[in-house]
Length: 361
Image (cartoon, rainbow, N blue to C red):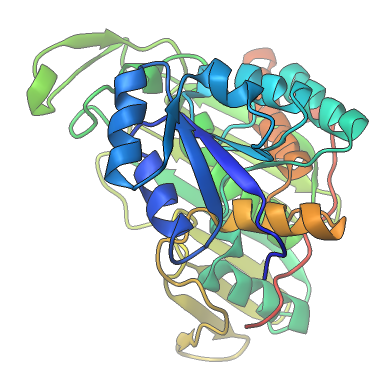
């Protein structure tokens, strides 16, 4: 349990803010005392919807001395600036992914937090949920022996059929790798440890996309970033993995993530969820077996990472969904795209400690 609750201010009142505000009062409790948005009327509407006492501009929230931590839910292009300003104002930060759009900006945030004696964390926190923590426990217990390799697939046809404003998904800093890659890469690094080098290949299926979602149906948007990326990952542990993220696949039966060990295979749940099935195939077995989840937080528990950071701030600990982990994931993504452009293997600039496993129960 938290001691005297640290007071959180939320910046960015878009759709994703709803689940954080819902969970703050129930599933992953923490105290949100103010919300802010560039559009003040949107902040006011969200404050009224969730009985938050104050709706502010971002500048007002960052200047408020009573706010201990900032929950940064702005658009990806604004993540680095808002997080930097919050740290400079003496506040802990938890940001939606990605940490920043490039490694240089991400490294500057991690360095600034350390210099100021503050904590910075970053989504996704699905790695702290019941499904992936059960997998962590199984790996640590040696159920598949020594992990040798892994595969991870995020294959879709894109977002323009359902997203009301899909434009930014097809610009630099987004695409399938930066949009969904953090879920898969945070999972792989949390379970297998840091990556030391990458080889990337990338392509773009279309020069423009046609929106089919009803509100802007028929509009065309330019595609300015790769939409199918393959990354070969070489881990410091000696394990290797293949990651494919795509907005150019119309259908697939491939698994989300599998980890292959000397004594068996684990099939993991969707890393964009907190629960989901964990399935094991032991060496010599003819059938797969679904294993029980042995940790809490099966339902959508966004905010779990923020709560963990607030607890770490009060105990001088290290948050599990840390800025260092998010920076390493950002390095993997940036290096994969750079490798694809340059046609060569790249060593990563960063490393990170494997996050501590959650305590059972």
